[in-house]
Image: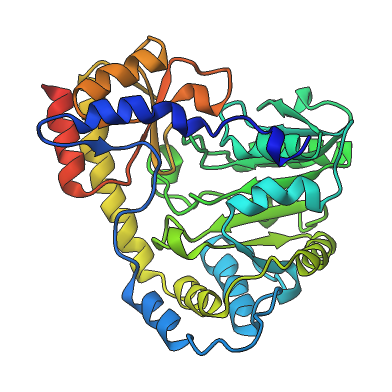
Length: 367
């Protein structure tokens, strides 16, 4: 299978609902894609501007300053201490890594790639790209022989599910038993809301409490798109098993997968500063506190959603019916059909809209 054989881009199917929502007299409230609407922090933008004399090729491996900053960030924000710079690697956003990781690891026909049941669709796209078999499963005991790559996602997109230390340990143990690489997509880790995650750090797969101190076969993937409003910068990174990181670095050098030097400077500034991250989280907290009770008042049940950037909800009907009813109120969301076959009655609501638009959605839902 090649790129030309991939399915139609799923979001194209939402276009008619978007048109209905736009026809609302007070305009559309777009809670579908999850693209940040708040400004890029000034210290990050300033770092980008100051680095625009980028006459030389950038380093695929990342500048020493960036790699050190990522190492410090893992220790400070994720509880992962002792990582050398050789264990980290910047990437051109996280989506390209998710899509290309099976290719970069040499997977092909006959191999399986496991991903969550409610899943960001690019996990399956990456498997299909190389002819591997995508397998949707949250239960490590179900992961089949022949699995070469396992994706976990905590907090999850779309469902906001957070995996605790024991669940992560079970995933690590099973992946190692299978001889598979375990890649943990942790892009929403700063956004814990409910249960223990209201006060505790969302654990990383690289946390010593999970790994027992051994990083073999493990990768943590992180993006600055949400915590720092850098979606347009395509700024992300990975960390973990040094042998895996080295292997990926070599492949990425051959393919020219390198971040522009100004973006690397901006990333260094972003991961060094925690103040703007805390401010952004409070913006999302306020939006979540406004939207969640309004959805419940409108007859939706919120499932999981204890972390992350979305509310995963169901009104007990097919998601396309829910999308139609929402569009008539001028609200656009994402259908559960896009995230696998297991949740046809769920709808994903993003918190990435302005305060005014979130409040507008809440009023319409209550009405």
